[in-house]
Image (cartoon, rainbow, N blue to C red; front, side):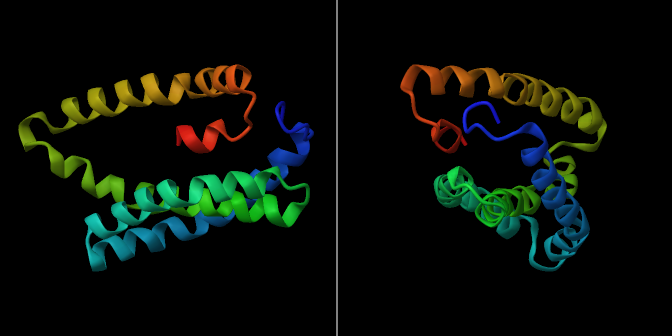
Length: 139
């Protein structure tokens, strides 16, 4: 909103619509994970972020509801591939006797460090480089 000059309402309404759609399909992605395995869906999500981040952010920079929505969907579908699979994949990484402690510490620590500092880091990178595409490179 700050960098591209959109009103917060404009961005939030599009994001809300995209998130509602993603909420309706996340359980279907979980079913795909059960059918085809966790690894293919996790890889799809990661490759989606790798290859679709830059095109998605280029679309988000275009003024108009459709390009912004498509850009957010590209990122959102990549995220849903990972989130719909993680609830089964992450607990399987740890032995049963340390599963919940290890998972909660590892997940919450990494989410705090990387997720919590991302807005600050991206805003700083944008101001240092002058490029609004820094979120795509950071992703």
